[in-house]
Image (cartoon, rainbow, N blue to C red; front, side, top):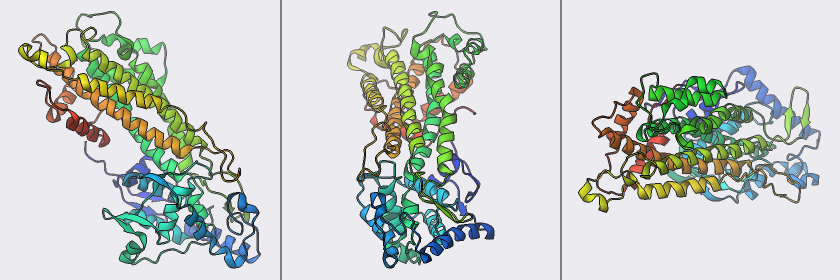
Length: 515
């Protein structure tokens, strides 16, 4: 599949879709920052208003006070300028793996879009530098672990604030470098963050939201791929295509379920005459595939709504209303919507893994595969006793499925009281988003195994001289897969081919269904 060309992505007052964040994250589109004079003045007005409050010695959380439960501690004006650096410094305690390049770009894009609303009290220079990081692909090294999802993604986003200030490390031109060195190479002066600016960068939901955008796109493609695999398996298992009849689904009209059934009818070309049926009703993993996959299909709409509303919101604290000259203290850093969306996605994706694992189990078992060889081995009779085909692949798929199902435990209900009981109810949204990406990784592994097994099953079925030609969409897919994956005749190690299949899935290599 060719990489799509995107129009330039404009960060500013207009809302952005998930696809815009993906285009930036995957470097599929250039981007720009809104720069008209009224917009620049709107941003500047918030920063000026904050400065005016400092002149009047106003009390503003995180600007003239300490952070969190330390909000009762007044900070004398002579120390206010030092407070932002202290904030990102003491939060420099992240652990675990670091975000990859695409995820880091998604985080930067999500944070920039939120700050572009103009109610965070930051300077236009901060927005410009944050955008310059994206434009020049200067990527802060961000550890994944250490956020409870309220007050936002404080610890991981401290790495963004620090690198904008010329501290800590970044990935630049494929190398880990000190942020100070990269600033010098690009001729930039590191920012000295103004009052509220470190808090504005860190006290938000950008990490969980950026990861949620990536998870959404993977789930959307997985839905279509699982439908295509199901169609191939209906052929391989000589299933009953009438299970997907349009009149049947008119009687239970969940839109996503109907969509999946429609895709299956399209793939199987069931308007054409069908062969005599082997059975009246297939097992549930074939017969109920639209009902399983349809739940994900129907959920994508509200998942998009939750993610895009969070993406296009000001989600830090306090909110600076320069027009009304008010400072509004609240809790917009709380990532509950993303947490619920990602916990739900884990459940939805786990069910896809389970469905495909069950289909694969049918394919390899001579009791249920209607005449295919044991374990889908293509070996001739005189070598059949030596060959085991997809036996171990099915075991692996079962292991990956089990882990994905174990991972469906919701993170959002594991709120922990932190930070001297100031953050006494937190969202766990970032953990939920990381979990969702892990569930997707595992389910894509199941899908890769199921796809190669389905390809083998269709090939084995096609050796029968009486076999009917494949419907056009499946014939095209079968041919494309054959370019990468030869039939398994004599046993061979399939790891390399499974990894190639996973790369094809990551690249969304196969054009599947129109929306």
